[in-house]
Image (tube, rainbow, N blue to C red; front, side, top):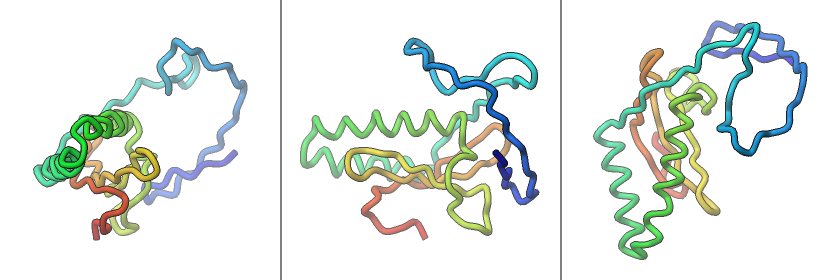
Length: 140
């Protein structure tokens, strides 16, 4: 299998699957195997721009007005999405071809979900810039 590492450098990698293991129900995934070419886990710091924090409050308030108990459920989905960003920000789709570090995370929730617009600032930091429901207008 071939994989293009797309940061504008057009690097291509050949990936060889050597073995498929059964999932361990007690293990936390994803995880890496030890041995040749093992690498340290990369964890990004995820921070929220003030506008993104206001977006989260707006979304929560919208649900709380209708059903306070139901308004708590999306928080879990959002937390899982943000946890995903800590490790895999480059796996999210590019928001714009002109800005490869500006990306969108789709957060599944029920029949719809949410979209977080974020920027990969450097090798340690991801900043969430905005959050919207999938039925709202696009960011741009």
